[in-house]
Image (tube, rainbow, N blue to C red):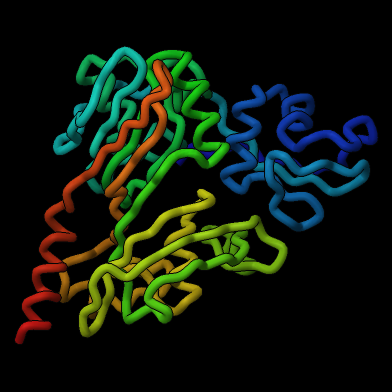
Amino acid sequence: MTTGQHRALPVPDGLEGQRVDQALSRLFGLTRTAAADLADAGGVVVDGRVRDKGDRLTGGSWLEVELPPPPGEPAAPQEVPGMAVVYDDDDLVVVDKPVGVAAHPSPGWDGPTVIGGLAAAGYRVSTSGAAERQGVVHRLDAATTGLMVVAKSERAYTALKAAFKERTVDKGYHALVQGHPDPTKGTIDAPIDRHPKHDWKFAVVSGGRPSVTHYEVIEAFRAASLVDVHLETGRTHQIRVHFSAMRHPCVGDPLYGADPTLSARLGMSRQWLHAVRLGFEHPADGRWVEFTSDYPADLAGALAILRAEAQG
C-alpha cells in the first residue's frame, strides 16, 4: 500500500483565522480541492481533534496532517461487470454501482472503480476536481450499491457540487438493520467524528461534526428491519455509525457490531446499504430528475429469507 507523509507542526501565526483548506494549500502546496478532500476524509487534526475544511485555525495550535502520497501513474481504465448506466447526456451520467466497486481510485485500492469503468466504456467525464476523482461530485463506499451521478461537463460539475453542498439533492437509501428501531420513524441527530480509540472507524462523539439521519421502517421481521433512510448530512459511514449507536447495526457490518451469525444466515458478508433513490435539478435547465434502483441479488435474497421465516 502506498502511503502519504505524516506532518506535525505548530500553525504559523500568519495563518491565524484562515480556513483549514486554505491554510493547507499555502503550507503544503496542495490545490484547494485536494486540501478540502483531505479534511473531508478526516486527515487533519488540530490540538487532538479532527477538523473540518471550513474550520478556522488559531496560531500556535498543533497541526497534524496525513498528506496524500505523490501521484503515480494513473490507473488504467478497467471494465466493471455489473455496473449499469441508467442515464446519460452531454452533462452527466448516472450509474447503478455494484458491490465491491469504489467511486474513484485512491491509495491502497487496486479494485474496480466507477471512474475506471466509465473510461473503459468510452465515457469522458469532467476534468474538474482532483486528478484521481475528476467528475466525481459525491461518493459511495465500495460496499454500498446503487445510484451515483458523475459530471461530464464543467457546468454540471459546478452545479452538482453546489447542490450536494447545499443539500438540495434527494438521496434515499434502504438498509437492512438488526432488530427493531424504536420509534419506527424518527431522526438521529448525533455528531460524528473519528473513533477516540480506533481511528480507522467513526463514532458518535461529543463535539463531532453535526450529523442528521432521517429514517422510517418499511418492513419489520423477527430479527431485522428494512429501513428507508434520508441523509440530511453526508458524513463518512454516517448511516452505519448512527444505526450502530442505536444498537441496530446494518446486517453484515462487523466493523460496527453486526451479528455474524445473522449475516451468514442471510448470505450477507458485507454491510448492506443500497442507494435506491437519487433526485436533483438538472444543470442544463433546472428541471427535476429522479432515478430509482432495484435491489441487488444479495439484498433481495436476504429479504426473501426473512419474509419466508415470517410466514412460517
